[in-house]
Image (cartoon, rainbow, N blue to C red; front, side, top):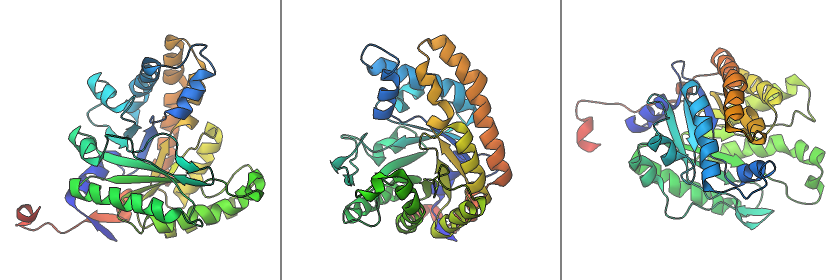
Length: 325
């Protein structure tokens, strides 16, 4: 079992619920959220529109989540200043810029300018998160791993949890066909987990290692998730990747049965809210529908999931620990 320092252990405790399950919500979307809101609003999507949407998500869902994920541009500082983040809800803050540089088939993740792990710690957040475009089978992977290694080192210095979210993408003409990409996805996700968790990260925010649109056999899906569980040296949670809620519920169930420690759900929970222009009606939808979705996912993960501490434990603390800390 992997051993961690007490700061990281404390942070992981704060990201999870009393059962050791991470029932987390993602609100750190930027470019994708602008596009979603832009389909409804005729005017350009400005700063305040983005902030208001994220604050509404926080008001409705943060009291029911073990932790929430926000970006520093539109959400993290704003939610604290507005006084709407419950004191017992963990806060993850993203490090990366929205989008990527480089070619579409050779993507580079960049850190948001003037932002770093030290500032995330300074603001009182629980942990740092990095979205990483990643293909283990192309040359740029080495550069991406170097980014993870550097940030992991920063999180070790600040003694706070580091969550990494590797996201695969299509390479080559054959993979332009969704069915062909679905065939290689299990291998990509499992190998990525193996490579990323060999570095000193603390939680893997993983894609589901298959595509339920093309693979319906639950036996195969469970096997892929068991392989993912074996490949990951740290606790892992499932991301929602914008699928609909019903599909995501199935993914969380299968993943948790195979060893996942919960979920970090974004658009699968709340994407329909982007199409509601009235703020009052939007809050009603969040309160009447989306909270119920989150609660049902949490109940499922609590029942089927594996506590995060089955893969991690605190390093020994003796009578002189504080001298060297």
